[in-house]
Every structure is written in structure tokens, then in C-alpha cells.
Length: 605
Image (cartoon, rainbow, N blue to C red; front, side):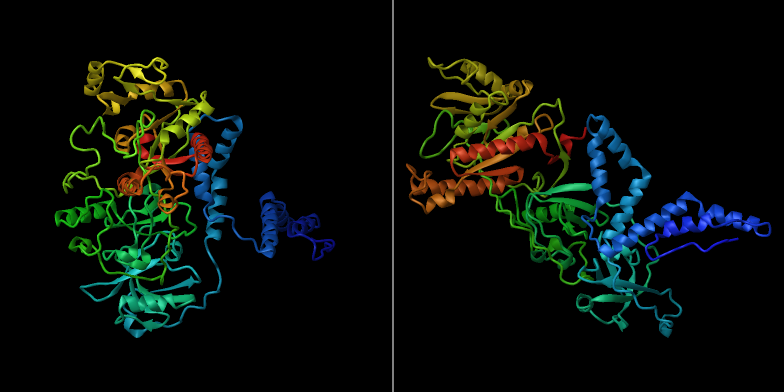
């Protein structure tokens, strides 16, 4: 029995009203059991909490909030994974425990669901009647909301039946998030219009011009596509890709353009020919198509076999080979025009002069070899072999951050002819000798009076040098004025074992040896402003160097960028020695504290 009416106003909160109402309940003899039950329900703490949550949500609704990010769950998982990889302080352990609780995971999942969906406009009611011709078939009416975002699906014509079939669903797109459209579904109508006799391109145009609610009449596939968990495979692209230049792509509008060096998250590898991927740090939640590694390699081998493959080890994709069309159905996008143009990354890599501390000639010619390449000229491109060539397509990577107590990462400097890497390296080491060290080279020449063993060089006999060559102790070696010079693995280890950052400048061929789990090298390419120098007689680089030498530097730089640019982590444009030194030291500091993408074998056992 309620003895008195609770005093309420428009300012009274819902949970406060409930508490006030509970205090007014006094069960009498006739309704003791019922009112006692009601009092217990109203007094339940969980109900009070729900009322408070309701009020907070109403307040947020009035403020019209917008999400800061759409993937809080992934961010929390990445943070938890990062914490698990290292020694933890007390507050870090507490944070890891908090991130592992199911309640917080559920809250973050709910946040992402709300952040990634747009619930306007309101969908109209479903039609009450279906076409008579479809009565005997299982028909599904699907309503999707299409605002600025594409639907994220492609269609194709079935060659046998002529039916319009959903070819693929792009992960993260509107169709995928709805869970209502699946691969293999037959599309019958769009917005009430029969599309059985329309071409896929025409259907795509209808959908691209539609806004708001889109009604699809679908015959469901017998076996619907399972909703698989999104993959966490990350790849570094080793070539440039433009879908609109690729005649093999099943749907150009659904392709993902990328540049060499971009990091791609592959979210689906179900199709052996076309994977679905997203660029890391891209705000677009919907995945797009990229050629799979197997397909890209297959068509490049075919191109090499046909003799149309360039000598370059970093090939462009083929555009008209017969192999391009194998296993590729013609598809049209259910999403309209949706090609994202990536930002241009003009970062040509110039590659280096290993022993410039000893000499510098105006002709800028060298004669050095890596220890794995004892035959032929170092600058001569190898003859392509379709069976033995490792094509530059993708490299699986993961994020790596140095842990306390680990040996520093090796810093490898490569550069163009005329980059003067040695003076830049020496300047950095001189300014901070406690932190940075030099891999002291070996030589067979006689020691000069002012030189010290183990400081400028390790002086050894020619017989000992040649014996070390046979034992593969040098990452590279060469001859100058009848004397041998070389950089040994042992000299690098000596610096790293002192917990110093070791700086080496080598020919890019040596990266084949140094890119390993043992060194985890960070490769910096130093280049002068060669292009400016060609047109500026006042340039400091131009002084004492003929224009033909500058042209040679440009040609060499372009060739080396084509062959080794995919191995470069950072490009440093050398304006002058002072600014270049400051920039290099800033990069070295970031390498020690920030995470970077590295090949998976460097981190995983």
C-alpha cells in the first residue's frame, strides 16, 4: 500500500524517483506478499545502476557526442599484447589485469558497435506481399542504410544460370556489419526494380546513385558465409599497386591502392587470388582487394617466362598478360566509386659508399664486393630466372620495441654517390661517443705513425685477411691501391656488446647479410639534393664536380632505389652537415624508444 504520493519534478532523476517510490511502499496484511516482492525488486542495486546508466546516456544524447575512434577494442588488444611482452611495473600489471576483464571488453565492444554504425534514417516498414513468382522460393528482404559510406560488396553474373550473385563481402563495410548479406546470395531486386536482366555495371550504378534506405530482394545462398574473426596479419608492401591499372582485378572500385612501404593489415585470405586488406592507420574501416602473394608471383613468373619482365627486382604489376585473367571473375561493386588515392611518398633511396673515410674520388667509382657475391660485377644486374627469383611482393611484419637490457639495434647507413656518409657518421659519434660506436674496419696496408691499432683500423696481414674472407668473417670487402679493406661481423659485435649503438655504412648488397634477427638493423638512406645541384651552380655539392658526375649520381641513385629502396626504413635528405647530423641523432633516439615494423622472424622464434 502506498500511503503518500512521492514528490517529483522534471529535475528528479529516474533512479531518485525509484528510491523515493520504494520508501513509500508499506505492505499491508492483504497485499503483503505482492508488495514485499515489489519492494525487493525496486530495492535491487542492479536496477538502480541501470537507471543511473540510463540517465547518463540521455545526458550524452543531448550533447550529441562523436566517437574519438572507432576501434577501441583493437587498441586495447594491442596495448595488452605490448604489456605482455615486457617486464611490468605494479601499475602496468594492474592495467593489464583491467584490460583482460570481460566487463571492460564488453564495454569496448559495445562502444565500437555504436561508433561504427549510423542508425539514421529510420527504415520504412517491410512490404506485406511478395511477388507471386517467388512464392515457392526462400526470399529475404534486406534493408540497408547507405549514406556516404559504400555498401562494401561486389556482384558478378553466374555463367551457368545467368543469376546475379554476391561475389564477395568486404570486411568492415556496411554489408559485412549488417550480417544480412552473404557471399553466394542471389540478388533479384534493388529498390523494387527487377535486375535479373541488367548487367552488373548497371546495377552498380543504380546503387551508387542511391542514398538513404536501399531495399534488396535476395534468394539466400544454401550455405551462408561464416562470420570469421578478423585476421591480424600485417604485411609491408614491396611494390606500388594501382587497381585501375590492373586489368586482372575483379572489381577496380573495390581495389586498394598502395605504395611501396605501406603497412597493410590483411583481414581475409579466404580467396586465394584476391585478399582483403586495409592500410594501417587508415580511417576507412572497410577492407578492399589486393592481389594475393601467390597470384602476384604467378603472373610475374608468367611475364618473365614470356620475356616481358624487366631486369629490375622491383617490378611493376603486369596489365595485359593472359595469366592475369586466370581465376578472376568479372565483378562490379555494390558500393559505387570508392577508390582512395594514397598520399604520395616520394622517398627515393640512395645507396652507399662503404669506405669513404679512406678516399673520395671525383669519378665516384668503386670496386667492392659483399662476402656472398664473389663473382661478377657488383653493379651488374643478375639475369632473371623465373624458377629461382624471389619477387618483391609482400613481407610479413610485426611491431617491435626494444626492451630494457636488450642489445641496441644495428644502424645501417647507405647513401648515393656523393652523400658523404662517413663524415656524417663520424660527427654523430664524436658528439656522443658514450652512446654511439663505430665498427672499426680491417686493412692490409701499413699503419701510419699517427694511427692506432683498433681505433682507425685493425691492421692485419694480407694472408690473414684472405683467410678471414674464406671463413666469411666480412660483411663486405674490397681493394684500393693494392690494399684490402673490409668490415667484419666481429667488429660490429664488439660495439654492440658494449651496449652502444653501432653505426655502419655499407654497400646495399651487404643488407642481405645484416638483415637478420641477430642485428635487427634499422636502415637509413642518406641522399644529397642531387636534383637541385644539377640546376644550381651555387650549390655546395656542385663545387668541384662536373655535371656528368652529377648525372651519374642521379642514374646510380635511381637504380639503387629500384633495387634496394624496399629495405629502407628512413630517408634523410642532406641539406648540410649540421642539420643532417641533428636529424640523424633525432632519428636514432626514436629508434631506441618507439615501436617500428620489422620482419616477423626477427621477433618470433
